[in-house]
Image 1: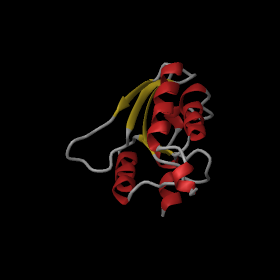
Image 2: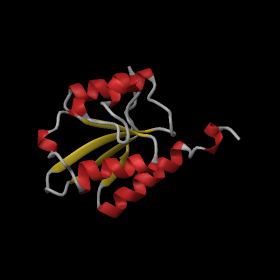
Image 3: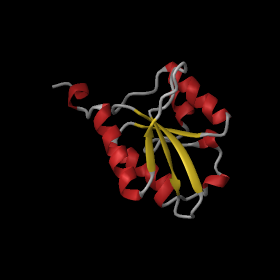
Length: 131
């Protein structure tokens, strides 16, 4: 059996994201933008443990997969416009990013540079890790 076929499907990870957001009271919307290629899968909106308003865009991937070039370009463009965008390719990464941005933020959202958003479970920013 190949690793690829035994890995969870992207839809299972996305469902986990939706369920966890519901558990912690974060709005988790399916995000589409007709005419724009590469937008993230989900837009999360809520308040963190400091009661700061947080909007976070999440691109969901199958374990081990990376965003396509058009997605990387859109992530960079969104970050250049001040938006926080992350990529999650496992249920544990979903849990880590929800902790990091909503339930147990180590750094207040107002003090974060969107370009420094890490990919939970890996070192460096998403864009840096992909280049």
